[in-house]
Image (cartoon, rainbow, N blue to C red; front, top):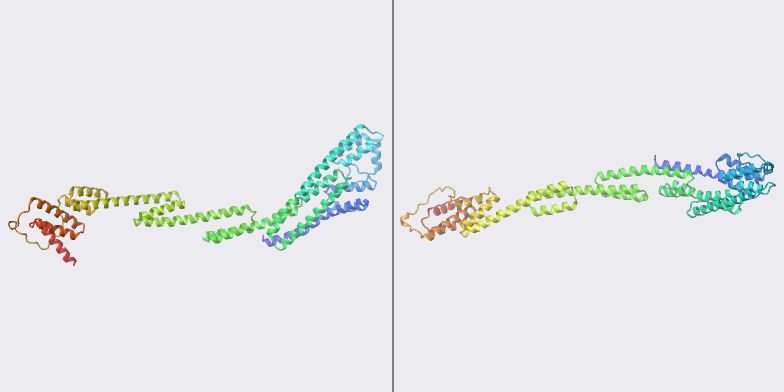
Length: 489
């Protein structure tokens, strides 16, 4: 139902409920007539009040007092149409004292202490007076005083916390226990006036709030009114109707906020939720909904961040950037993603780390092998090359260097032209030391050639010819290198 329709209905309900105070007004006016010794007029008002509400105990008490003042006694078993006279009461006291004493007991059991005390008092003054009558009267007086004190204290406590309706009820109970007490009568009338004034204030203020469509002020007024006047059903009914309307509107707003979050408009959704919570800070369900929305947005942002970091880490792993991959893995742990995703990425980073470590060890072994071969330490170079091939068994460079050291003939390009060999008879034989040195230079030249270091290979082979001018292999290597350089040019 639209909130405007609900507010219109509530205004009519509040206006209609103002007539419920007519009974209280009639009772109050009847009490004033009794105090001014006009019981006949008071009885007319009470009969009018009874036609509107026949459930109020106060009507029976005041009606009985009116009839008593008009000369008629009210028997304890009579209804609202009391017609017995005081003569019947006096005769019953004289002729049936024991029966009347039992009637007094019944009245006392029904909490009509004043009526019971009236009977016992008249019995104690009759010719058939007994000590038990006087004792019963004393007990009833004590009981009456206790009841009056009890309800008087409750009335003052209720008044202190603003429960004016409860305070009036307690003063009414105290007065009903001792209706001849003018002080209690004054306190009851004062409490009734306070109740009526406060009730009217609540109704007027509520009517203004509803007319202005100020639902928040209306709800706050109704919360207080339900505490101050728990017996006024109009306030509870109005509160329930307005609360149902507000809940319907609230659910529509929550659905709209959820749609904003579904569209990724997180900030707009959070701002709208904050405004909704501020509109009704006492509604705990809104606080719970706000926490759920924040958790939902945080989880989605966390998932998006995880996906972004995962993509970056995959790219770093593919490019072999171990440092970047490890840094992104640390960020992923900080974001707090799912364990399965992090474990998968960690395994890939570990694999990259092993690959990087193996590559570093291979490069180090190959560099050490080259350095040893350059220095002529072929045994050490062979060991380093063996280590390098363990790390990268298919590496052609390491294989070529190891084959050269083992004495395998290198396979340079087939020469297109053969170089005329110098006759051995015309070339002096090198010394044993020069021959050994020439052989080492020949091998280091082959290793340099296969490593792409052509300048060094040429230099080594020229040194071989210096030491052993008749070395045919050095001559062929130099010729092949020269031809290759010419083709490149």
